[in-house]
Image (cartoon, rainbow, N blue to C red; front, side, top):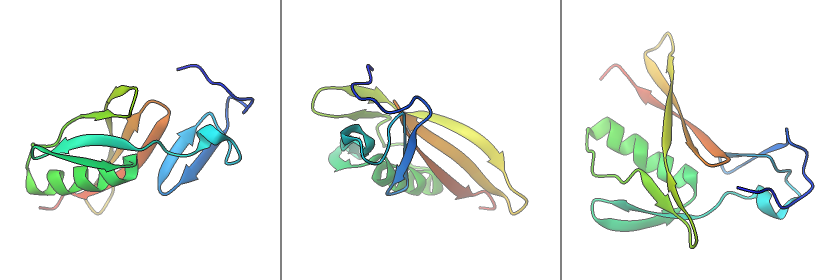
Length: 111
C-alpha cells in the first residue's frame, strides 16, 4: 500500500477504537476503512472495531462461522490475529490487524 500523503512515518491516530498507523487525524487517510464480511452466511458492514465485536462474540460462543476475509470496494484483506497473552485475571488479549489498522480485544479465559 503506497502512502499518498505527507504524514510522518510514525504517525498514528485512534478513532472509534481503531488505531490507524501512518496517518494523522487531519489526514484524509486517517479514518478507519469500512469493510464488508460474512457472518453466518450474511453480509455485515462496519469498521474493524465493529468486526472485532463480532469476533469476540464468536470467540465466546465457539462459533467459527465468521469470515477472516474483509473487503472494501477495491481491496480484499486477510485478518491477522496476534495473541498478546493473558493477564492475572485470566483475560486473554489479542490484536486484530488489517493493513495499517488494528484493534485490541480481550476475551474472558475463565469460561
